[in-house]
Amino acid sequence: MFTQITKGIKVSVQTSFEGTFFKNYKMHYAFGYTITIENQSKDAVQLTARHWDIFDALKEMETVDGEGVVGKKPVIKPGKSHTYSSGCLLTSPIGAMRGHYEMVNFSSTEEFEVEIPTFKFSAPFAIN
Image 1 (cartoon, one colour):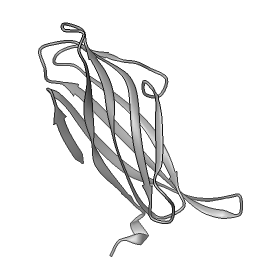
Image 2 (image 1 turned 45 degrees about the vertical axis):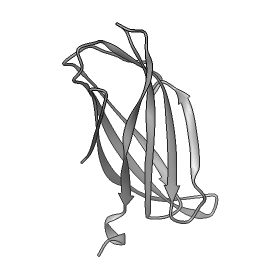
Image 3 (image 1 turned 60 degrees about the vertical axis):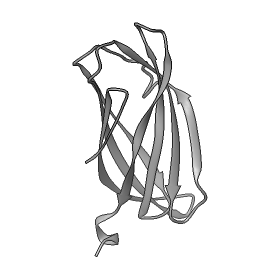
């Protein structure tokens, strides 16, 4: 598990290898990840956007920006958490992702970034 805390917001990531398949005559590697965002601060926050840098050992880095996570903009109260799962397709059995969430503190209306720790993907057969 990969974990990072920014301004009282703890982000934990668990990854999994989901399998391989051919797409457009090329082998692809499917990875899943589950992220838990825990609010350890004293104020309610809302996740409004995300930014990802996706690293594939056989391709250039890809950047993805978007609103919320998996179609939601969760409000996370103090002491509560939000968990979601998503996935990533790579052309290599090895890769990584990193990024940040954009959040709003409901008490101060401050907008701030919460770092997502770099987490790695590796197919079991690609590791010694």
